[in-house]
Length: 407
Ligand code: GDD
Ligand code: GTP
Image (cartoon, rainbow, N blue to C red; front, side):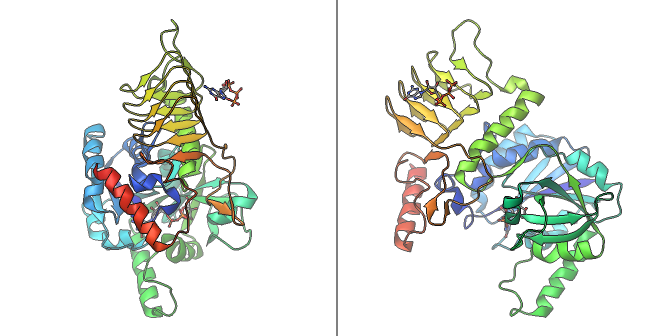
């Protein structure tokens, strides 16, 4: 049998995802009508014999409670639980800490998925590949543009066997354009290697390491590659990281595209009788949203629950969140409109399409062109441009956001 882990991280992370992560933890932000990690669960639910998924992170339990209830209803064949780390233990630290829980029932294999990615998750293909080699771990790999490669874990592999010869996490200089997607399949025997890595770390002492975290990327994959136990399965299908809030927009487009191929019923149909809005390309409109028939929506648009879209509105490449209201004749392009936000009439909210795999908000002190974001309610205050603020202001913003959630 096989189990799965989703590494969800915690509240100290995801600052690049502000302002959206002020109201909802990043892994639960909705993309294509569902929380980011719902898409992970959907893919896992299709793996034969996989019955148990554990989310590991350091958010408070209450943050995950609703999602877990929903998941139990939507994926009744899987048991989905949340295991909370008392602090950030690192990408392997949480796995090691909860090893007894994970190994209960003696599973043979373990999928580990980073939460902050959008992907077609070719898990069954990975598994077939994994079962043909003698390694302990298969990493899902993809090729990216040379200039972006050093933001990821980089892999050098044998061309025929796909055995990984070198793994370097975020190298200073270019080594390969083949990168890790942050999606792994392990044999459970890997916990022995983790134990070795852990001992190695503790015997080296605190002066060798900046902290006591155990990381898959830095502490495990190196030794695994050295002992010829690491392999890469290269996917040609879609993959993208979700780091900045703006990257939710391209991720949204990718999942809508996937719906069009695998479950077109989820997408909003073009209206034949002129009764509905004009739909262009892939669009997902929640059944409880009210969209004026004299509007034009798409491509790559998701409209959330109870949103209200007025007459003459144009929306393209955007995410409109729950209860947002877009009044008549406004135009929303390459943007995210937060929960309960109100955009007046004849407004133009226009971001810039994100073409590269940008994971930063500023570059050389200049703001990177990106999608426009209105956060919850007080949208104009919580724009992503506010960064590197004095601690006092930072605290004030987070306080305000909490109040707006409490309301
Ligand atoms: N539970 C837990 N505890 N989760 C964590 C922790 C931790 O201490 N630290 C990170 N994570 C989770 C994050 O929530 C995220 O889902 C994932 O682990 C990786 O996050 P980062 O450590 O921020 O790494 P990264 O996203 O910059 O790079 C990773 O992903 C790339 C692909 O997206 C690396 O694995 C790269 O090698 C990889 O290319
Ligand atoms: P399509 O019309 O979908 O083919 O878009 P396009 O790629 O030709 O044009 P662009 O991306 O520049 O603008 C997208 C759409 O928004 C256009 O169809 C415009 O008619 C519409 N639009 C642009 N500005 C406004 C505005 O201020 N208000 C409204 N309501 N619509 C606008």
